Length: 238
Ligand SMILES: C[S@@+](CC[C@H](N)C(=O)[O-])C[C@H]1O[C@@H](n2cnc3c(N)ncnc32)[C@H](O)[C@@H]1O
Image 1 (cartoon, rainbow, N blue to C red):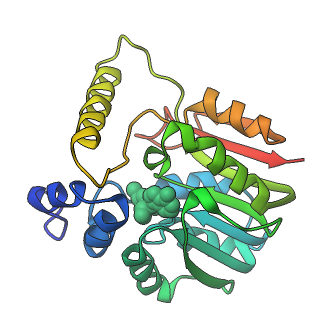
Image 2 (tube, rainbow, N blue to C red):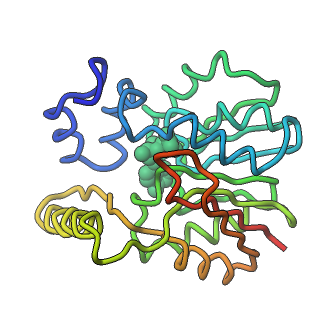
């Protein structure tokens, strides 16, 4: 559908009728040929704000998928880059794709639910890209608590999100229409497929992060087109 090596519309529909975990297991071999994989240009602009190569000891990428961010994180890190994801298929693909990733930090791939992270003050940097739509609003506090716990004092949680869009824009109503259709699908069909748009936007993310004792900086206008409307958020644990 998106690329000659990417998934067909039928394959995407089949994946959306299973759970998130099984859906990504099925999509994993073709995931990097979809627009759902975070683009390298966005990752580079984000990590340019984090620091120079070798400036971080340990990083954790939550919902790492096929390892797009882990590849970019490895040269920044001296010791470890850990990726966690619910889908073993995505983790296997990440491990395969990162075999030639530049850098010396150890790479680790762990199957885990982002809502039940058990790391304790282990990381200088936690990142997450392209996955907040898979977290239900009522579960966002648990996600943020696990990430805050995983950071050392002074450690940073870095991610990209948007400001709430105007209700006068077509995109707002398309997103609301998609979300409504997904709620109907999940009411009628088990297992649920959790994927919603316009979640974890700047005001909500800021409130949840500040509740967990993080100081939040929002960087606007730092990403290249077509991502310029999005913001890079850097939340630092005190
Ligand atoms: C759109 S992909 C993004 C992958 C990668 N971060 C990227 O930007 O290319 C979303 C990923 O989140 C993972 N995921 C969804 N819900 C999760 C959860 N509760 N815990 C861990 N991983 C989850 C999926 O398995 C999938 O690999």
